[in-house]
Image 1 (cartoon, rainbow, N blue to C red):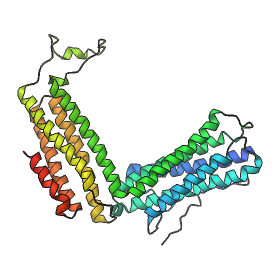
Image 2 (cartoon, rainbow, N blue to C red; image 1 turned 120 degrees about the horizontal axis):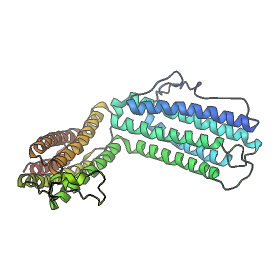
Image 3 (tube, rainbow, N blue to C red; image 1 turned 135 degrees about the horizontal axis):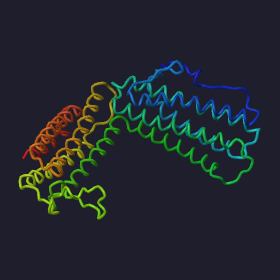
Length: 363
């Protein structure tokens, strides 16, 4: 079931391009239309909702995820053709081919935006985290298309096929579209679960950074983190160390708290790593997608709370605040364990490790 896309206002057409100025005018109008699509996609990324205008309707196809890679492939192919037909010097006899390929690029870009809008509109089915990632990737494709068309305008009047910066820009512009389309296709094929796994890896890197910072501090537990100031301390920060210029060692209770949470944050790192393997294959229904979105939100909170625990220890030497932050972290951890069970339908084989991990974390 496919709904016709109303793209007539977006699809700009002009008279036959018989002169360089005609072709430039056509390119300018196409660039303007692509810029409009880019703005629409940007608003979708910002608001996390479909952007509907009087120039483009939301698509209504049965399997939009099957169509996105097809459009991505078509956009890459037409970008390649644009790179060929716009090789300077551009003969007037090739102007028709130039215009045809430019129009095709615009047509498929418009169709892509309408599909991404459909996925945003149906994000309860596909998950928010997946819909947003696809919209973000789509925006990159549109930005690359706008940049390419802008660069092609500058090539129209070239009369010599010399190796110039502008000629190189043409090929680079095509490459950017390839790269953006490849990323979009990969995201689509990886599915919602693949996007979540990618987010988990990002969270894990943040947790590792915080853990390394804490462990480094534990080797020399100085109040305020023990900064090494440059010889030329133009802001006078070294004056804050102390009137006698000596660094103050942290209290034993702060160091003990830091050691305790160094061990526990190591376990948090292990948890996030193992979650990567515990996310089931993508399913596009509201129940599963809601679980993925909740798990993504909790993991983002985990990295924030880990940072808070480390900051309270390393920089503030404040155990009381650290304990409050650690309680918030533990709360998120418990909810992550519960959510992981739910999205795996409490399958004992897939969830048994969670009991062992939780026991170790609470020691």
